[in-house]
Structure formats: C-alpha cells, structure tokens
Image (cartoon, rainbow, N blue to C red):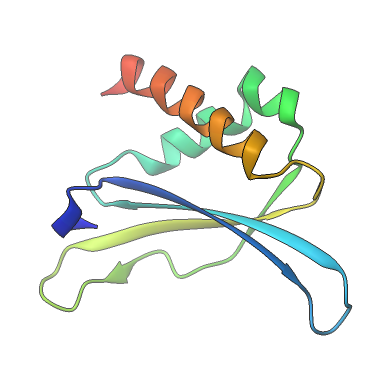
Length: 108
C-alpha cells in the first residue's frame, strides 16, 4: 500500500462456500495505522448510502494488526460478511466512493 501511496483500501470478495455450497460475499476495509479506519467503517454503517444499499454487514474476527515485513508500521483491517448478497460491486463501489468523499471532507 505504501509504495503506491494508498492509505485506504476496500476489497470485495465473492465466492461459493465449500462447506455449504452457498454463494457468499465479504467486504474488507484496510488501512495504514495513520488512517482513522474505525471511524470510517462506523460512518459507513450509519450512512444513508449504506441504508439504501442494505448490505447487512456482520463483523468477522481478524487479527487487529498485520505487520509489514520491512518495519514496525502496521496495517489495520476489518472483515465483514455481507449477509444480503444481492448488492453487487456496481452498487457497493459507488456507495463507498460517496461515503469516503463525505468522510474525507469532514475528518481529513
């Protein structure tokens, strides 16, 4: 992330669960420690953009900090199960862009 000067990243996963055969979606949020990630994630789930898309995110447990190999700086990450699998990247991407823009104008 640092080499590309990215301070925030969201990754969307879509797959079939091997044990149940059900289609699943997960959404992750990652950032360097300097980015207020927890505040951003909170702002997403309380936003009107989120309510319109209705993702029904359920937080999954992850290690709190992932260390970079070359130094002591860390990467923060949150992973969510998207319980409503109907909204796709075509809805989630624009929702996150709107929310990040709103968040940046207030927080950063």
